[in-house]
Amino acid sequence: MRAILSAIIAATLAVALAWWVSGLSGSIEATIAGVTIHTSTPVAVVGLALLVLAIYLTVRLLIWIVNIPLNFGRWRARRRRIAGDAAVTRTLVALAANDAQASRIEAARARRFLGETAQTLLHCAEAARLVGNETEAAALYERLCQREDGRFLGLRGLFRQAIAREDWSEAQRLATDAEALRPGGLWLREERAQLAVRLGNWTQALALAGPETPRNALVVAAAEAEPDSARALRLAKRVYVENPGFAPAAIAYAVRLRAAGRDNRAQETLREAWSRAPHPDIATLYLKPFTEPRVRVREGVQLAQANLRNMESQFLMACLTFEAGLLLEAHKYADDALALGLDQKRLWRLLSKITKAELGDTDHNAAAQADIDRHSALAGPDPVWLCEACGVVQPGWSAACLNCHVAGRMVWGSAQRPRLLAAS
Ligand SMILES: [Zn+2]
Image (cartoon, rainbow, N blue to C red; front, side, top):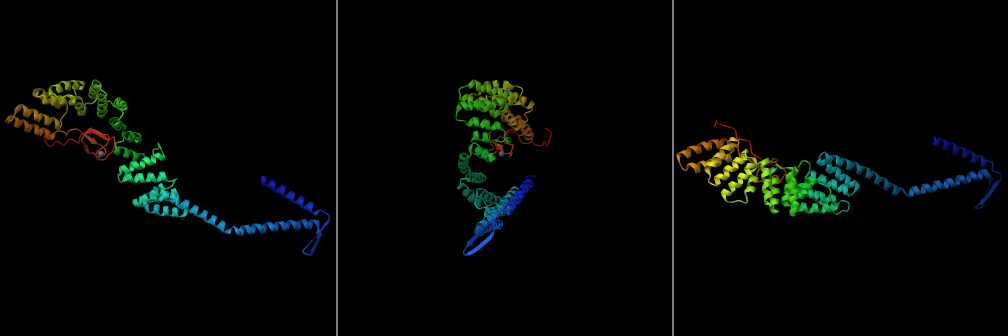
């Protein structure tokens, strides 16, 4: 509507101007280079207007001719930009599809069209990694590191390579440099958490742990490694209160209590933990201050009474009374443990020792040992600390597996019970 209105106004003005010019009276005479021109005023005005228009068009033509090289350069740059952007998109698609060859070709093309930018260098490096050329990728990441706008990207790439080849000290150096550029970021969280676990930096491992990582183990390890005793005690208490049935948490808390001189509270904590979930590691720590066998029996009773009808309590008492030479009691406790379901090889080993001590080198002992051996062969394996991730047995509890280094996957259990081949 506005365009129509403008056209009508312009046409009206043009007609009015033409009418005004045509109505001008008089004549104009001009002499240029000896040539005299005599004409009416309207013709002179129209001629002058045409002359101005011709000069304007000529000047525009000359400017256009002069700018031809510049405009051609701009056109070419625009074309390259469009082609480069398209190559970048194809590179991203190829990288996302793990198409190594295509990503390498398109990344090189984008670099050729767009020049050496942080983006093209990064894509070339990622494509080089995808085809397995780590050396070329490292060189490209190094180039990125030399750029103001690509330094973080370069460090991140080199860090990932260091993690992949398990060069932990180099990874730590690169992570520190990158962290200085982007403090507090969760970049490459998984890899950095892996590095923290490998270096035993449990506080950082805890901060970087993802939802898939059980946190209790990391908190226990952080409490064990914490140099500030007050903070360590608080951490250990927190994880114990939140997981009273988790033996490593109870042990970490009790150790910190003892370190703070609170021995009674430590023993009380261990008895509480035993009442919830008896574990041999708890008993070991509970009895650590005592060396005399009879005293150990006395203290063991205190612990066992926290959960008397548990097979671990009966087995503990069987072990302690045997060490104290109380064979009758030891046999009774071992029988009770068996009755409560502790049909494991450790029980039969103990029964074997008790029986040998009771009977000596007699024919009765030989017959009893044969019977024990038969039961032992059919008994379940002893419980152990086992990594759920790789299935490898560990020498003791730790926050991360000593074999596969996965954190928080340690469980107390045993391998499958052997199949029964004959009736007992
Ligand atoms: Zn493992």
